[in-house]
Figure 1 (tube, rainbow, N blue to C red):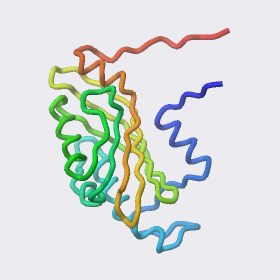
Figure 2 (cartoon, helix red, strand yellow):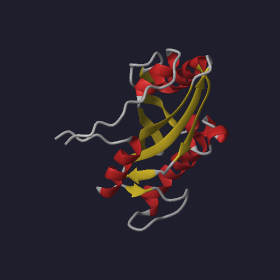
Figure 3 (spheres, rainbow, N blue to C red):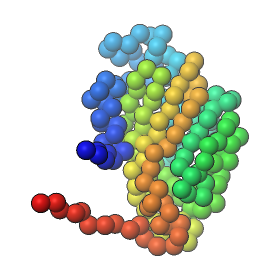
Length: 179
């Protein structure tokens, strides 16, 4: 049987399988050692700035905690998708996104941490330069080593993005009721 999860559903499934909600920057949550929590505190604080509050999003601190050789991926089913290597290409990815959109902002639902991984389920709101808007769920996955993000990936409903980039409202299909 095939299971389909929304980004938030995926994050909640991971949470129920042992992923814990990230502690506030600098805190030492139950079951974690100070040594394990400290290297990720700066990454967590940067992620909160980058993905909280829609119009308040600021990626400057996130860029600062990227490893020089970070690998960042996004589905190549959109014009700005692909694999980006290093900080410059990470920034080029966002510059390319903003060539297509008037704004593209996020509001995080949570910050979930397990070992070297940070998951950030978000609501995305965007408006293309041609005037089409969408609201979508995304999930950011980051891998952290020695206090730096070494890997990142966005999981998103790229069909909605493609719809608005092609100049029409996102298509929604009715739920099929099986009997």
